[in-house]
Amino acid sequence: MTLKIQTEKVLNNLRLFCAFSSQQPFKTEAQALQKRKIYSIFVDCRTGEFHISDSILDSEDLKQRSWKLIHILINDAKRIETSINIEVFSGESEEVFDCKDLDPLAYRVMTETFKILEMVALRSHTAQEMESVLSKLLENNDRLFKDTLTGKDLIHEAWHQVDRIGAEHLLKGYPEGTFIFRKDEYAALLEKQLCDQLDLPIKCITLTFNKSDDKIIDLTVVAKEGRYLFYDDDPELEEPSYPSIFDLLESLNISLKIPLLHAA
Image 1 (cartoon, rainbow, N blue to C red):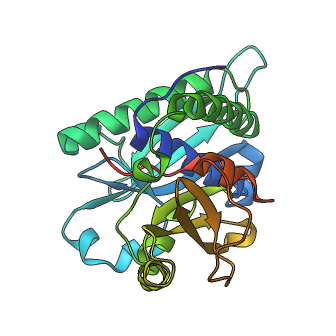
Image 2: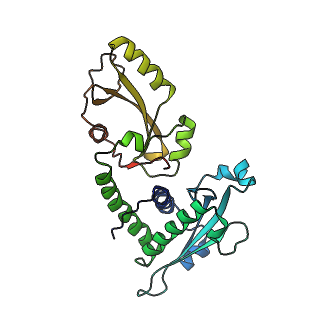
């Protein structure tokens, strides 16, 4: 299944759902016997973006109705010739969730997200098979996405003006290899130091990404005279450098394949 998903918020929702669903067992023995799964996800009423952090339950945003809790129920097909069924309920009233309760942007994002999930469901007989179909769809989309980004400024497209805590919040729940660019205090100080020392226009930025076991890693990227390198405590900048940010990322042993783009 190949489908070019162009709305970044929709793509991020699908990635988050895919990562979240693959980690969720059946919640109860009854659900296991009935072959159905329930996923509880928060939706931003302003943007339509998914979030899975329980911290929202105690936040002011939830109290001010900025977030809605929804339950996505997936029933395995009863017969081999039929597909699985998806239902979405409000987390508060347990009634069928109505996207019209959302702001216009959130409504568009949510309807597109669930339209794609329903297309995936039509090609699946079990929740496990749906996870596999969705994963392959996202892999295909990532390949198309990388071709689209070639020639563009990836640093600009994946730039987020956040600190370390904000970066952890953004990346939480996304699969391994999801990354953003930002500038932390260390990168800002290092940039000034290198510019003064080398008398060259140096730029330092922070690459933050998800690693396995929910670890968030920071690396400092140095841009010097049209080439990119990872800073490794060498003030002379003699580490291996690369002609593009794409080449630099591919030099890592970790596969960084999912840039988390900033909102347009």
